Image 1 (spheres, rainbow, N blue to C red):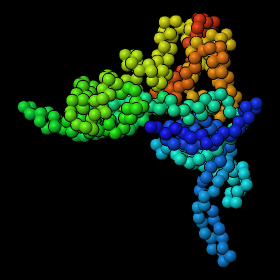
Image 2 (cartoon, rainbow, N blue to C red):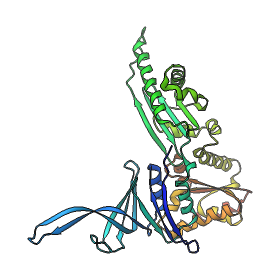
Image 3 (cartoon, helix red, strand yellow):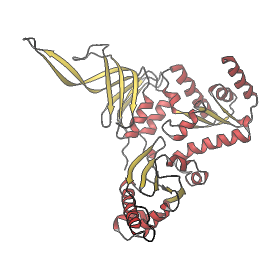
Image 4 (tube, rainbow, N blue to C red):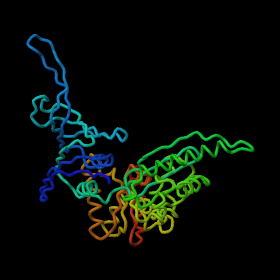
Length: 389
């Protein structure tokens, strides 16, 4: 199964919101959650290597890297998706034999490395993020295989990111007039490799649906091959053939995955999986904007004004707004989310790593579908625009 981020202990004073939690990130997506949890001003403690220069009595110097526990107040956070590490830069705030108080140090948070996070205020969004990261329900239940002749990607589609598990590239000779044998042989070898990659990377105890997409009939030929070839290694695919959904894509490149997720026929088959929920909410928003514009608004001013009238049915908000180092800004959005939930509205938090999150960001990162029309909000937008000119 999929490993979840381990929460080793937590101590929170719920009256004033401050407290600390200790985690061990187990996989890439955990670091994405951590990146969303830590904001400037938080305190993080973990083991690190520090270069220490010692001078002997004879005056010769010796530099060595020592392992030590450091506690820093975070000023700057950078996330490296490829290297799966988070770099936290800040000043040392606890006595340490190797590092002066107030000296700058960069802590690196990596997989399997324990760290403790202390916050002045664990607000609802932060607590929810912890729950999501440590909850077994959040595993990838959607997979996608996109292919064209000679190129395929086997991916897991998480709510917050699409992860490539395997890329298959094989040269396929052109069909010659009067003879296709070389081309056909190469295609069988290609299908064989893709089939094996699927068996190796798809855990059918977790995956509930596999999208198989290509231009033309490549996908049909692939599935015909793996489903009809009597080979023990293809058995898992054959036993789960009901969960394969065929669809069209323009290519076998990774970006074709987001293209499929946007297709309404496909999303109707994926209503159970989480990533599709955000994609669908955004689609509903655009439809409403076109058909009944007085019930669809975006931008903080209008969404907050609508929420004051308890008018929001569905709030769409991107997680990058909660990463703001401007605390007042963050508080404003946390409050909006709390309010909407308070009067029974639905809140969809979009990941900025997911295609849908990027699209929502173009609408300022926050949008709302209303329960009833509020044409008066349209003037609000006009006023605020004219002020800024």
